[in-house]
Image (cartoon, rainbow, N blue to C red; front, side):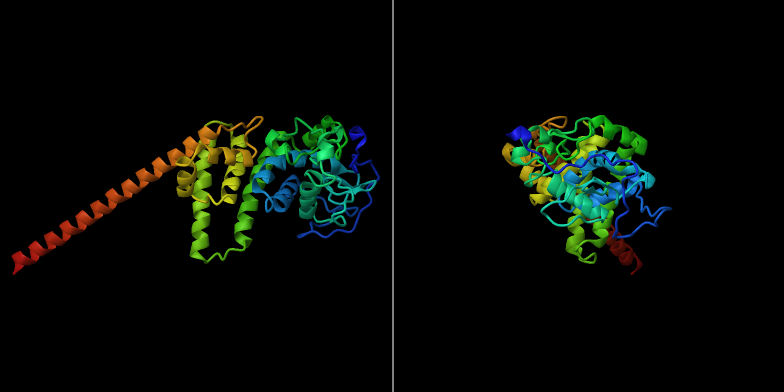
Length: 339
């Protein structure tokens, strides 16, 4: 029975079968000849982060590369939109960058950001017709596409599966190669992540003139930089960037927003706190497999670093005070000798 469970599927587009649909994009690119409002690789990556990062910044970073690989197979270099991603492509009942079928969540939205959000929340997830829905996970419809950059920990709750994207995995990989190749896609995703973070700060709900909000952001940035440095000493750059984002976004969600917080709650806390964070970030399986003890040691190191910084500041403050006292004493002596 489970083997027969089937989702509305997104088949690869058929050449010449893509009618141009009405579109509403936040900043619509100019229509090319024939009416195509094509997107570049960079624009698709930014759309992914714009739609997914507000929901889960760690997952946005972890799923960007596979999202573009799948999008390449669904919407890159169509007849109506050569050498670009076509956000309006249609194949049967499925439409858009990821050929999303209709769903109970509402009508299809032509906005790239909304398409990304729908893919993540409805089709990759444990929603009733999603790839990690209980019935789908137990049947072949939930089978993940491997070798496209998906991570084991994330695939537990969000994945690109064959139930929705039915072409063989090499089809999507070949399309991704045509769109620029995996190395380029990784670089583009990294750049889109930084751009999305900058945009979020620029338009965020926090008052940019609020000193408290500014301090929280500065503390979060310092924590993120520290974590990236530690993770980067173990994993290669592209993995380290993704792991760090997943880890820090999980920590922020648990109220750990500074190195002081991390040193106190993780470094000095019970190992179970580090275990909770690693598991919540999806970093306890597969190619990541971050040892909770290692995370605890990282944050013990953060505490030691902060202690050194405070000690150095105290020494500097004492030296400044001593210099000031010496200057006052010398000035007093000069006044005495002149009288």
